[in-house]
Image (cartoon, rainbow, N blue to C red; front, side, top):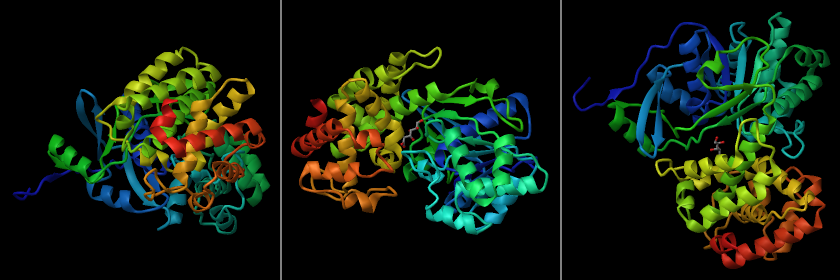
Length: 474
Ligand code: CS2
């Protein structure tokens, strides 16, 4: 090492064939699924090394390449930090640069699982119905071109090539925060396959597997300051570390068509039906995360931990759990929902995790249905008031308008951002009418519910008049 230059993290990747291709190589997968797979191989063996695929940009590949695909995962607990180096990646491909290389990786017989974290919008489906949006520009492209752009396109074209070559299908393992996520990805894959070749769709239906999963670990985006922190702690420069909380959970339906790593050996819960776990996590964690993100952002809080340090917001979220969300849930086997809520409150308050409200606020139009609107619809059908979640929806509208409480611009990241910015009116009832007409977000049962419309207008009126903190204290 030259004097003055820090040591660089470096690793020589194993030459063993990869068993998994992962689409959407973001920080979440690198801090969650990749670590479980690495540990499962250490515990029980198997060639399950991972080829990561970035569907958009080359940044992660470019930062990981000089490190031999290794990276540091830094665990941030209230009591301190611990670092581990993860070496399970065998290669990283960038789909837009070379889609054929991605297909070749997915077609290799040694690859027996294709896992995905492509975010809610990556499935090209209608969030309110779960069906493929055949008008999506990437889907239209993928119907006409053998080299795809979308995640469903890569899955279908790779399965088509495997079928043609007599290679059995891989298991499609969805790791995104969608309800019945295996069912959703199966639906979009079969819808797309049917449009390309109905026989292919029948083959996938008969031979493929799409287990649903529930994934959980809080992984804030890595910042430049985090790179320095890792260097100070480990003595090595890593250009692509990931930050994560100590907690992790992965619940997986044990329906794989072509083998799997020994996930059970490393704490993954293998179950017959993941639905109650998914509902619990999406509604109790992600639903309150989004609620705190919109209200917290509007109240001027940078992170979830800052928002939880505001007693008004901590009490607000506690009311959401106890009065609005838990009463609508069936607890998963062996789970106490009140204890789960208490654990969430402690996780959110972890001051070492700087999870920005702005980051969680992203893509609200894709997140709200499964996180918040289902609970609202069920609560209303049961005659149970849901004022806090209704306020959260109003806060999302206010946020999505692109103006904060001081009139400053908000950088809204959402596929519907331009459309939503145009919906804001001086009259809250008119704003609510405009948003409720978004049928890709709101299910008919809420669009047609005059009581919900009126309560949402009231909530938005209070939010605009009094500000987020006062509205949340009510
Ligand atoms: C968050 C999730 O960004 C978001 O929308 O709600 O990423 C959340 O941190 C994870 O699902 C936790 O498991």
